Length: 477
Image 1 (cartoon, rainbow, N blue to C red):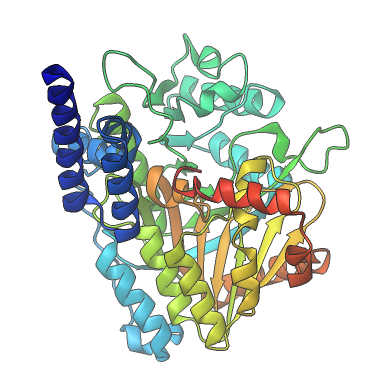
Image 2 (cartoon, rainbow, N blue to C red):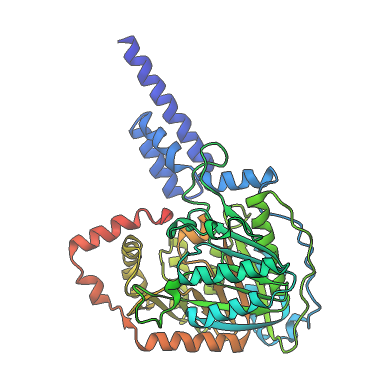
């Protein structure tokens, strides 16, 4: 009897201790209340459940690595080029662009730089030849980072030209995420073994060192050549991005970007930080590129991840939605917004802003598509237009705000990209680039199917229950 009472007291003491931790560390009161109910309602076991999955170890561990010198802040020494005063530049003659810039200045650690040129590249047919040509023309160094680097036809072609560049004296570094490397066999490291290419994995799985992490993945896609040209966007090194190949099974459409100018320095710095994190090696300082002739784009590289002081992508995207005056266009493969993002989207629509969202009709992650559908009713109710793009899977990611602003890069509109992974995006203030991307969006819209409220209301009850159940896991999708 006394033993039973002692065990009950111990279990309740553990639950009370967990509840104290929840009150001190959970910012969302709904999450705090839910976890406290679990902890106190299931004495001992509820507390164990909270300690196992309720704590945000991802952010804590990333910050700890950073504080020990393992993480991702290196002195960059970036000095922005001289700019025409902001109020004289076309975007900043209206207040909404001034406000989004002030927000980004506050939450990012890189300046907005002038004198950049941007080229939009669609699918592997346009992106890969440009990237391969840049690698073949490299003279001094090149840095390549990819989440997936397949070992089929496309990946082998890239491996060949990278090895050839290293053989002729170019300093070649390749960084691939340890989880992304597993997508193809043989693994890409086997193609570089015994060559002069310096290859490393980002956060390899280990029982003795940094541990086993499905999260904390490096989702960035970067290629920097001689500090003069850079590529980034949503495209991995994968044969599936050749969408025009009639024999390709399950092709993946995507969009990538080629940059000239000081923004390449931001990309270069991001790679240097990741390389240091993966290898412990501090790369030598490099000169940052100067503004290019005819470069009218104002750009800023945004490194986002759980090691950062702000949830940058959440702040910047919600800021853009809040600052929008006329139109917002969003294209993303994975759309699982949290309540903060939903409120910003609906608030923009209620202010009279046209908000259009294009998603792929066929998603390679059905559980993510289900969690996404669970939010449709609320978004449609407030006038947001949601469309499904038919055909092959569309992996493109972009947000356009009014006439001059775009956010492009590797991040999706879900918690994994915005809070759990390491991502690299670029803010672009440029009317011409915005118009080119808006034309791309308009072409996709022509063939898209609009989702109507009656589609949601007529959905089978079992499907609604399934979607809402999946939405419960949205912080982890």
